[in-house]
Amino acid sequence: MNKENSASRNFILTAVLWLLIGVLMGLTLALLFVFPDMFRGVPWLVFGRLRQAHVNTVMFAWLSGGMMGLWLYIVPRLTGRKLWSEFLGNICVILWNIALLVGIVGILNAYTQSREYAEMIWVIDIAVMVVLILNLINIYMTIANRTEPKLYVSLWYITGTLVWMPLLYFLGNVMWNPPTGALTGINDAIFNWFYGHNVLGLWFTTGLLPVIYYIVPKETRTPLYSHFLSMVAFWGIILFYTGVGAHHLEWAPIPYWLKTIAVAESIGMILPVIAFMMNIFLTMRGNWNRFMTSIPLRYIITGWAAYILVSYQGSHQALRSINLITHFTQYVPGHAHLALLFFAASTIIGAAYYIIPRIYKCRIYSRTLANVQYSLYVIGFTAFFGGFLLTGLVQGSNWLHQGLPVWSVLPGIRPYMALRASGGILLVISFGLFAYNIFATVISQKEDIQPSFHVKHVESRATGTAD
Ligand code: HEM
Ligand code: HEM
Image 1: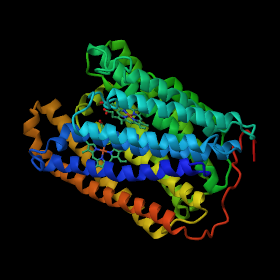
Image 2: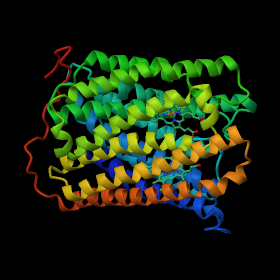
Image 3: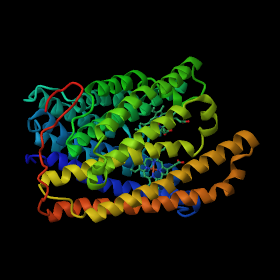
Image 4: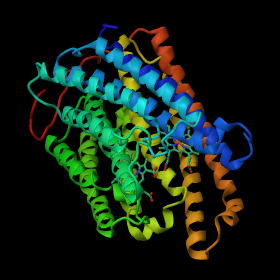
């Protein structure tokens, strides 16, 4: 429990197991769209329950658990201090996994509050809050005791994220009202999407951009191009991204001005996204050969590209004229997967390939497997995402322009649903290879042949700081 890096490793490894469970649930959902009667009569496999279980498994157990594991590795490296308490970190791992296991099994058995990203019942919310707060204490104490005077960009993001999420989680889950975990009427929808959106913006986005800011300079051995640009991105996200929850509710009876602010700020997001894009692009200048040779960097740069794509897509789909066609269609879960399955998952996979071998001072078990995994990931995702987009556009245009009822559109979209499920099969195989490779790395601990470990973090040509 007290071994150096054990909490980070345990968070990452348990998250990888959850990934497998989560994507198998996703695949089952995708198949249900093609063969709706597949599980007729099995209550815990009905779409409504399985969808919530899938979303909670991948968002909290896999992505969030994995992300916390990455921070527990990165923060000590950036502060020059060991983690304040490995013991506390491991308590967080255990509590987090038990809470999610109970929460997800509960959802499958219909114990749910049925509010998006706030489905789990009150007792689970308490356990989640305890972990979020203990994790905050652990990382803040590590930073408080740091020997490195500079507060690196990544630390800015991580320290902010650690404070925002417990506040958001408490508010969004309406934790002062245990029986329903909800307010009443339309206020609840506004509240739910303030929270739901910020889980994406102030948890996954500000939690994973620092991972990209950390690994790109490390793997290219090049200082981050600009500390200033990273600050533009940081403050830009805080300014524009926090108030856009209403762009999820453009057709709900909420105040018009609230929607207008949300749309305007969604367009404003182009600014921090460009700042982030250019910063990493310019850091990569002269280093693109590393994209092919470094497995972690390849996934991290794919995550970076996906973040830019999903943000441009998001700014466009927030416009009322576009949202009119895409809302209530499969286009939106398509965007959700570009965000979480391509940006967030790719970043965590790349970072896991970076961190796990370093913890064990060994090399990745099989580069070939990692390369095959990458190809399946990109091909599978393209088909999967294409299936979502095509389905969504056909649904939207048929309803809007032809006035066709929902049922009459269904036969026409079946081939695209099948395309999505086929892409999903490749994705599941790809994630299976990833899990195998990570666990085989841990078990075999092949001797390291790269002398690149523990290179001191470097940052910012523009400010000429720490080297
Ligand atoms: C890292 C992996 C994954 C993540 C983070 C993820 C995330 C999500 C999220 C957030 C949603 C809700 C979307 C929304 O409300 O708009 C969702 C729904 C869904 N996911 Fe995934 N997913 C993953 C993997 C998969 C895989 C591999 C498949 C299929 C093989 C899949 C199939 C689905 C389906 C069919 C839905 C329901 C869409 C609907 O309600 O119309 N997911 N997923
Ligand atoms: C500039 C950046 C972005 C903008 C302007 C944006 C905009 C939007 C809009 C307008 C919707 C609602 C669509 C609808 O319901 O009709 C949406 C949904 C969504 N976005 Fe984004 N997005 C951005 C980036 C991101 C990022 C970085 C993530 C993840 C880290 C993300 C994750 C999601 C998810 C999961 C949903 C589905 C929510 C649901 O369950 O309905 N987005 N986005």
